[in-house]
Length: 250
Image 1 (spheres, rainbow, N blue to C red):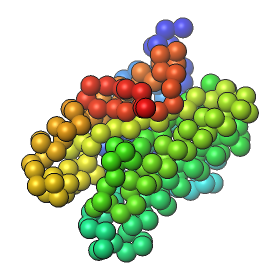
Image 2 (tube, rainbow, N blue to C red):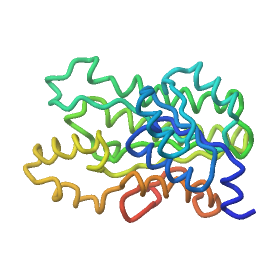
Image 3 (cartoon, rainbow, N blue to C red):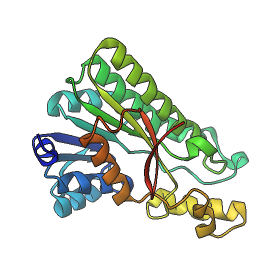
């Protein structure tokens, strides 16, 4: 079966599909004629994505465990991409409250846990593919972003844990984690690029140049297409991603 036939016969759920990397993923999958369900909290932005791409809008909270179960059971997607997350509050550590510090744990990490746990419990059909997004902050830290780096590192751990559990249970699930570099073209990335460049005493291009060309929504979308279409090529769980493409994590 060719790539186009694979995509045309399948359903994807993109959690966080209304903007940023999620929007890029939706566009890349729709372009392959896949049935794409774009899920997010903001109904207005979802409706814009739906009208502009042809994706199906679904209002929902990534961190809602009952929603994760219900959606997996109802849609039986062959591909699930978890890219939603809270926008971190950018301030020095002593100006954070516990609520701002921990916000990403209660959205990004809780949501990833809920979806992957339910994939094991249902279980999702053999061959189902789950892609978790982490962040380069999981490697380098993010001193202005509270617990963001730790939450994204936990997403990475969760993908590795669930990949091992699925293999041990013989479920036939595919699990990937992608770690994109900081991107100034997403809402979160734009604010973070400015804040961290100021902290480092450099301009934004200099900061971004330290990790190679940045990932963009389009690049992330094409990376998801490649991971899903070529299981024999991408046999590791976790990959770094910048403008030059995917590279296995050490």
